[in-house]
Amino acid sequence: IGDDLFVRRHAVRLVGMELESRPTLGALLEHVVEDPSPAVRQTLAHILPKASDETVERLLPLLLRAENEPAVRAAAVWSISGLCWRPGLLQGAVHRLLEVLDQESDSFVLRVALETVVAGYCALESSPEAAKTWIDALLPQVAALHADAEHLVVRRWAAQARERLWGQA
Image (cartoon, rainbow, N blue to C red):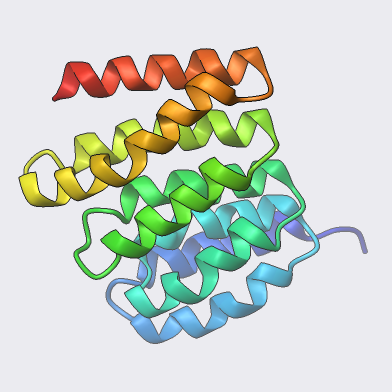
């Protein structure tokens, strides 16, 4: 019959559109983490900001740690920028992003993580306390990447992230 990844991906998008009004649909997302298609798992990462805190706390670590596909990990990292403004998720978002900045080896995922640091800070600007928590925790790791990253391009991206954060402050 062929691969129905487009149907599965669309189904995940539809569930995502209804998550805020029907949070019980979040239970369906547990199965998406194991979908054979990276495109479907990437769609899951994109809809995480609409999921409940409990669903995010269950699925985000799986997409960040247990995922083999860099594009899916990158999408999961980027979803953090849409989650960090939620008070119940701020500390977890910071922790997950620190793990990525410290342990990730893929340059693309690190680039997305550095962009997420900046985007998350911008999202938190209206809450000075949350923004301070974010920047105080993440800036030292960005500085470490700027100084010690294996790849020169990652060092450059970290320097650019630091400059953008400095410009925002």
